Image (cartoon, rainbow, N blue to C red; front, side, top):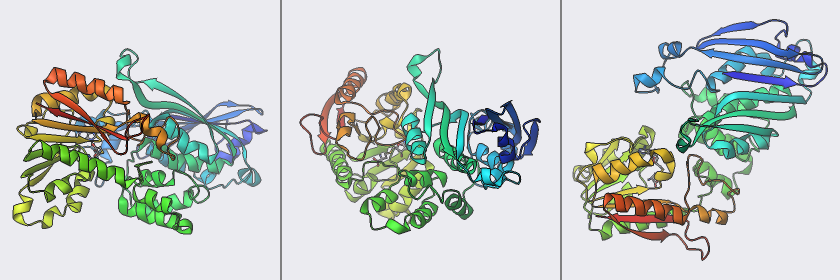
Length: 465
Ligand code: SAH
């Protein structure tokens, strides 16, 4: 993992004073997760570059694992991208190795520490969950010129598509402490992972390090939500404090309520979608139903309220989403007869799962666009070949309609986790092929108000055997 910071402010070698690291020497610090080396690949009066090289020790990571969280699979604990990419480890290293500089303190050059100077930071490998569009939405508002170079997942298999990894260069004229604070907060936000457990202290740290720039950042909700690892209680507390001054703005309140769902503050579309999916399930006469990728249980609730559905299974890969669903549905306090009708399962639509066999119908609402395109084939097999319910109802955004969302910048997808969004033709081509191959008839229905040119905001396919 490599971060370089370059300045052309003259004499450029003053960078050494700002960072409290002598350009003439290699310096190594032992950190709990490995070693941090600081050295200067170039140090001339005209241009000086400091490099922070992190050697993360994956075995130490597993050994030091403390507290809740963490990966269940042991293999993943050892085989992962953590040693190679910029992540919250980089933030920790910045704080430990460049702590004074991040605090804006310089013993020998105090005025320079307060002065905006031309700076350029390059992160060799930054995982950008949300891709280059999100990278720009995060760093450009704080004043950086962003250059990003993406990489395919595997150069020999072009079909696998793009990886989430980018080489990123950020250029700005700013104080070194600003640059370091931005990196400290925003690198883990792009990576969307943190190796440590989040507590109230993190809220304080975020508010402190973000004091100058976070309150006015257009993506502050997303930044806070990801930085605090989606812990709703903490996120809410941080946002409340950040937005105290403009709580009257209804858009802010709505955005704070649902940080990740970017333009879809339009509740009626969601309701229309639920209504359409329910109608399709009901119309088919289903009694035993699956909600695959049920998330926080938006569909499970009306299913439970309708006695036609005698057996309801919600399945999702995210334990966190299932916990929220359980709470929202009040599962622990339902009368026994109602509680018996519903079950929540953790599982992945990527793998054959016998628990999903033998149902009348399945809803797969707003899920396929979260799957990497090369993995859709696995999804098709799992749902249409192995689980094989009588009816399958699939909904997904219609990308053509995105131009109608005034808050969505051109070329952006509706949600930062979306791997793709399809036009009507693309969705129909996919669904028709799956129908033919798996012997299901398919019909298509628009969801939401249809526009004569770009169609409806959501598209729905109903597959029947
Ligand atoms: N159907 C819900 C949630 C949609 S969000 C609704 O419409 O409100 C997409 C959901 O798909 C998330 O909860 C996510 O955890 C889940 N998901 C993503 N990949 C998955 C996979 N491979 N297997 C099962 N669920 C998955």
